[in-house]
Each structure stands twice: as C-alpha cells, then as structure tokens.
Length: 141
Image (cartoon, rainbow, N blue to C red):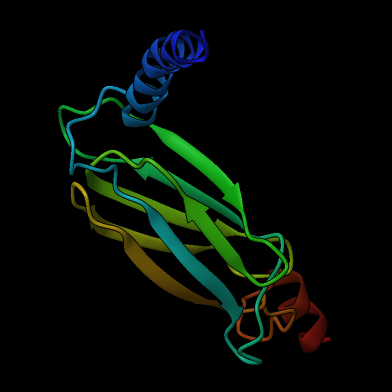
C-alpha cells in the first residue's frame, strides 16, 4: 500500500517538475541568454556614486523596432538593464544638477553582458563664457 502511494506521488510530481523547468527556459534555446547591460554612474569630480540618475537606452539599429528602456540608478549608483536585444544602442544619462551624458554607438552582442561605468559632470552655474547682449549693454554704460 505504501509503495503505491509513493508511486502515485512520484507520477504527480514528475510532470510538475518538468513544467517548472520549461518555464525557466522560457522558450529559449539552451545555452543562449539575453544580453544584460549594467554599470555604475559616479560624479566626475568626487568619484562618488550618484543616485537617481535616469538611464535611457534606445535601440538605433536599422531594420529593428525602436525600443526604449529607462532605469534609475540605486543608492550605490548602480543600474542593470536585463534582456536587452542585440544591436546598436544609444545611452543617455540625465539628472537635475548634472550635464546630460550621451554614449553613442554602443553595440550589444547576443549572450554577452556589457558593463559600462560613467562619470557625469555637474552643471556649470558659471555662465561667464556665454554672450549676453543685455550684459554687454550694461557694461558699456
């Protein structure tokens, strides 16, 4: 009697274990993984991590659907973009108080994780180089 219960239990669990394994593969070929893009964003002058930077990744390859993903850096300046389609992308980093940073011609290869580190500069409040017509008139008086 006990052996028949064990057999019944095993026959019930076997399909469930196979089903869970099929879900893990998610329809992909074995050995193939989606590329992952990850990195760290730091302040260019202090070299400290910058939290809250919006990291936008846009695919720009011809013949490919334009796809845009956005992520925000964590407290340690880290970001991780899972499941990137292979191809060429544009990466844009934005945060108030910092200059927008663009990285073009980044190529993501199938099955390869790519780690990028960015140093972003604070926005300059000093506008002494900028031509101001009104300032010029005031200087002439």
